[in-house]
Length: 196
Image (cartoon, rainbow, N blue to C red):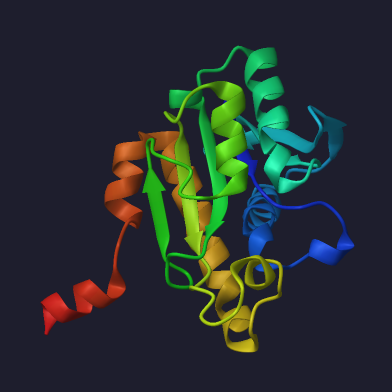
């Protein structure tokens, strides 16, 4: 089974904020594959079913972001899954331009509290993470920025970004992390410069 975790904060006040991109991607993935019947377990909202021909579980922790490891650790342990091969975590990244995707097979938390807690609980940095760019905060405090909602121009493009993130997750399920990195870790600006 593949464990697909989207990170965010629970509650209506956090809905559609930049820090909840992980939740938003999983919502679209569930809709795309007709997954229904939300359950509550592992301190999370959980949907399971088949994605790209593989049994998959979508997990949205109901703890706050900095306690995400509790949910991930419980699910990995219960199903005896290997973090390195069976887990992908979807998070926002304020260091990336809006809409850019970056997939890595391992690495540090990069200051992301949700990833830091998953590493603390699981004892490893060796699991796939899908970072979704939300743009740097500029002059705004980072905490205020990530907890705010998208600008209107970003909001209009958000559907395409979510769709690309879902495509990346499906690729990871069928073809693994390396192939997904090769296909989706693309810098459109660099590619445009190389073409000109």
